[in-house]
Image 1: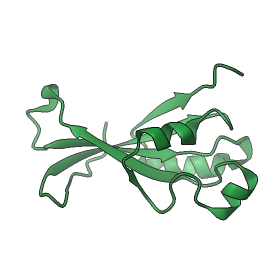
Image 2 (image 1 turned 90 degrees about the vertical axis):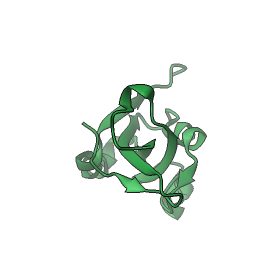
Image 3 (image 1 turned 60 degrees about the vertical axis):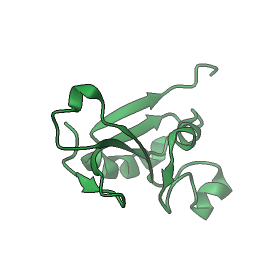
Image 4 (image 1 turned 120 degrees about the horizontal axis):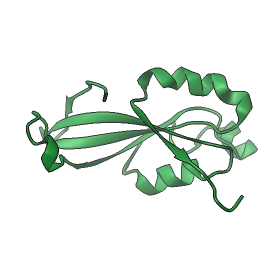
Length: 117
């Protein structure tokens, strides 16, 4: 079930938020997918951590989002928009504790698989 974290945007629109964990093996394209989908980035999004850039891997959770109009099947809800907050998770096995730290806020997940490997 989605997080009950409704909020109002600057335009006064009511937004229903769903947190989506983006998981997969290291170098499977998780951060690239998140970058392609996102319209709003947090300060921790897309491997902005200098150590992440240096090592070439995601080391911490990254947060970004995109918003869509509320689908017709959700029209009965008191919201105007549906926001998906993407939680970009590290893919390296040694960073599992970081991933587990984000599990409490994740409503659903997307498993990214690189079919060329």
